[in-house]
Length: 152
Ligand SMILES: [Zn+2]
Image (cartoon, rainbow, N blue to C red; front, side, top):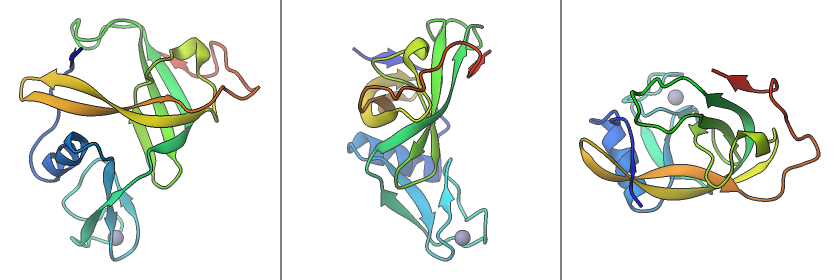
């Protein structure tokens, strides 16, 4: 099933990111000069200004650092409400904003392991593979209830 999504930001380095996703790889830019990760995609390093950015492949493993569940329809019916968003602290990279796949906010726990999966999506520019995260393991004992994340 192809999921309809709001239009992506495209052009420049953004196109390279989506091309790697289409190949089934999560790659983010890393500065060859200072080692800083860059995400979202940039044309030059925001830490040192270098344009020497390499697309490094990530393992796709991480832990949930935060989450939010949107109850308001900010996207004119393009998402089912509530709409869950998670912030994943990648094991080998930066924080990455994504969606939970196969679980929803009542089951989200801070520190819970998450593993990358790609799901087929579509916007006005066509089909693409969206990086989202499935549970990597059962949640730790620090399970969260409402009020520990954000309900917007
Ligand atoms: Zn740099």
